[in-house]
Image (cartoon, rainbow, N blue to C red; front, side):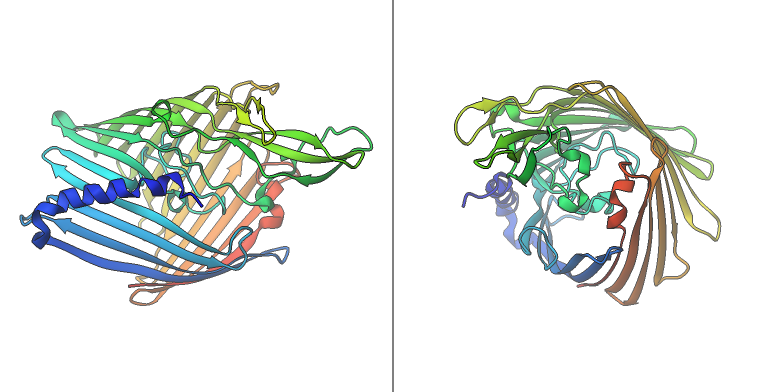
Length: 433
């Protein structure tokens, strides 16, 4: 079986690591750590959503004999067995695996990396470099990011200017949610009388090939400003592909009269993004904001198993903006509020659409062992939403227990209401070493 494209680029990171450390092997220091974890989840309708145990390993190292290292490296890996998995129960994943050399005012990194662009936490219009694991769509967005092979250079210029450039040679798609999370309107509903859908075939994709024309790249320029209690503003340009596909469905006749198999077609749109973000400390508040316009191109054709090609489905141009504020209540929780607006242009026979939503989060630590979090997401466009409370407790050094719930509400066919049966409770235990 051929290795995934991103795994074939791992030798690039390892070669860079050897190049950085080869001249001073006696001056290399490293530390091995990790985490053992177990989790169980059950939906309100009784379905087991997760029954997993796993191990995460991490190797951190430094190279150099001075006070500051000349280079650092990180290698992470994860193995998980989940008895409730809809795919293979046992999975292994390479996480971050990269080396960074500090070359004066430039930090040069190569290998599997995670890049975080933008200022806000809920919806990040400019944070488009990494794909995401959306098998649990409402997980913490920071934990969903998948490490991707890339070359990254961060330059610290005079005047408080920072330039962050990335070059991503391999396209890696996001991990899609399972069938339990797919809304009913994903399938065609205008079939003629007497016609029955008897199955859904494996999707056919127009995935970007590994070639020079499909290399993704981007630049974020940040300026630190001496305003208020501190502020910064950034501009972003990115040329690449959407990590989530545009969908289309093709009915395929079978030998049985009136019986059809639905063939999903997936296309990953080439995109160009222009965006900006800012953050500022004003009194006891931190203000944050982001906005981005995404120009959509046309993906390649989809090759059919029996020969021939079909045009891949195409998405539409989008504009997304978010504005938020954060503050710490004296003796109480840390509060965060964000308002988001998403606009999708007309296309593929569908009219333009707008979505307005808000997100309110509160984090409270009554003592050194206990953490309480509550997040509320509400879509004002269709009246649906999500309430997600969570509790963590540290039993001993390195041993932490967690409990969280995801409660969806809304009408039939609404954004979150379609997931009402997926409302669930999850508990877990983790030991860090």
